[in-house]
Amino acid sequence: MTTTGRRALLQAGAAAGATALVGCTSSGGGEAPRKPSAAELEAERVARAEAALRLRSVTAARDLLERYDAALAAHPALAPRLTPLRRSVAAHAKALGEDGTTAKPATAAPSTPPSASASVSASAPASVSASASASASASVSAVPVAADPRAALKELAAAERKASEQHTNALLTAPPEYARLLASVAAAGAAHAYLLTEGAPA
Image 1 (cartoon, rainbow, N blue to C red):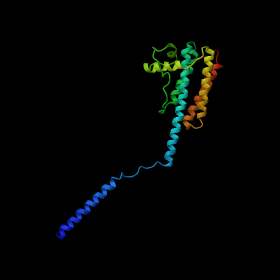
Image 2: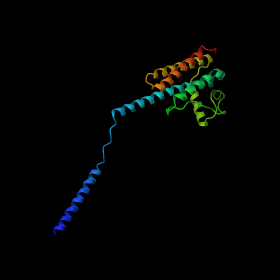
Image 3: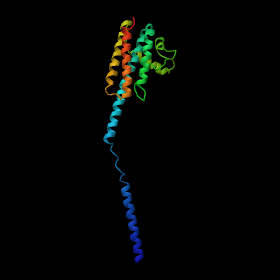
Image 4: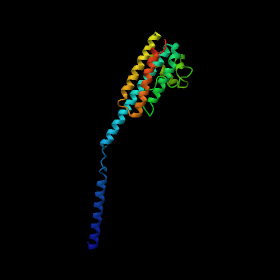
């Protein structure tokens, strides 16, 4: 073989070796995934804790809303007294559930169609799907209500105090803006409890 031919063969072999080496390197999967930093892990922990706190808060408010709807269904005569308070509780549940908080849907959506029972429609605004209304009725019927109107008011007052206490306890770990909202809702709940038992005659 001539010198020129030998040189060409060596160059071809070197080129093939280099190509194989590059192929092995690239097939190794590239760089390993980056591990999150301590700051990133802490930020995720804080976000999860806040989401859980918001979920508990909005669930407490919606449970209270269920009790109002159940009381109104059992005692339609209490509607003039309970409807304003129920409207306030519904607004609190909505405010606490903003920013993407997920929780079980409220018993009564912000509104109820005219075809719903008179007691529930008297306590809720208008326009919600039939499926939501059926779900609301099922939830309301599952909440026990005292047969005596005075006892039913006392039950609602106790539920208001319990929810108010839950919101107050949540203040300790809530972010500043949400803590202010919780404080406002807790104060309103205490006022509602007073109005339900001592603030007006039953």
